[in-house]
Amino acid sequence: MINIFEVNETNKMVEQENLDVRTITMGINLLDCASDNLLEVNEKIFRKITTLAKDLVRTGEEIAKEFGVPIVNKRISITPISLVGAAACKSPEDYVTIAKTLDRAAKQVGINFIGGYSAIVSKGMTASDKFLIESIPEALACTDFVCSSVNVGSTKTGINMDAVRLMGTIIKQTAIQTKERDSIGCAKLVVLCNAPDDNPFMAGAFHGVSEDDAIINVGVSGPGVVKYALEKVRGESFEVLCETIKKTAFKITRVGQLVAQEASQRLGIPFGIIDLSLAPTPAVGDSVADILKEIGLEQAGAPGTTAALAMLNDQVKKGGVMASSYVGGLSGAFIPVSEDQGMIDAVNAGSLTIEKLEAMTCVCSVGLDMIAIPGDTKASTISGIIADEAAIGMVNQKTTAVRVIPVVGKKVGDIVEFGGLLGYAPIMPVNAFDCSAFVNRTGRIPAPIHSFKN
Image (cartoon, rainbow, N blue to C red; front, side):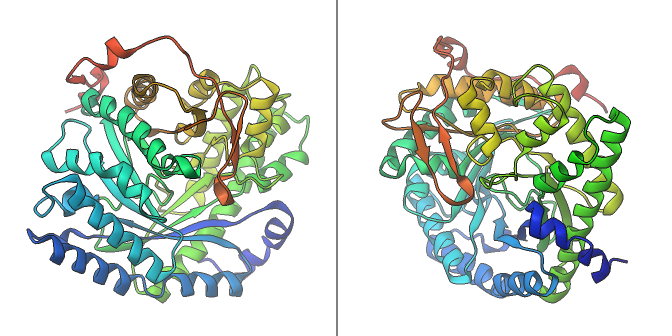
């Protein structure tokens, strides 16, 4: 049992160390909204979301006030729309009408983001999948709260290189469609390998087909809490370091567990998972990079960074799984550039490059996240970056992702401002050598030999 006394223990974490519940995310199954009539599909989607989630924001605010724990975002994830709209949508333009409906529903219930404008194409693409993917640039340009994701590979199926090639073009088109807002549409679009069905974090969240009709998932953060705890054991052995991280992660997860249980009970919707991810914010002191510095690195990106991150990620998970029976989603450490002041400082200092970030993604929670690149970067280069990250995920049986933003009109050394939790970022250089002959091959990269376990 978890009680309010455990939460009182975290008051200092909240007030001084940037502890927060990053999100309460309601997952909603929309498969029963499918129809061959597009108008009917849109009406059903709007009605179901606004009915089930009508009290989500109010409930989150009440829990935050009662327990004294900030709940930063209230979000919704939905069944991948390429499945829901398959019968009714005969063109990309048809899918855009659903995106607008999702945006209207999000505004009606007052949430921050809605995720699930998605397609799962790790082995092949249906006509519906392709229509949805082709609609993404317009869909993200004409909406405010819709987030999109495309899963292009998995350990069991390999990497769909046709989808990888297409996504390079789609990211470029999305950047152009939203160029008046520093190509912010790309900040709401992520390409994944091994995407989990229960991730509460945007932009990669969707409600998997294996889930209940509706669920509550909670994402907990707290890099500042971990950094503060490590300051007290500065210079101690790795054993002490690891124990400190585990114990801190345990306490953070218990807070999320309480919030999840309360939200589930009050909304009358089953509890799904706790996602314990050290997700940073632009606030000073709320940085994964600063944790790495506290562990002993001069800057994130210095030799030893990947080892330090691997240790941090593992200890966070070990502490979290002891605090909740249902830890899921991504769970570990995020390393977005624009959302982490320490990462930005490392880029500006010259210690952190995209290549080093790619190495770090082998051991972190996700992948290349919120990285601003020059607007003239070729679509094939972006596809090559996606293929590299997908390969890391496929071979290592983990989730990897790419959320890069080719900011139209910006070059290396410029700064782009996204605002809010998305922060700001320096434009990072990318390898200029060509990979188009590789990504233009058709078909898919086969699954690795260790995927065959039957």
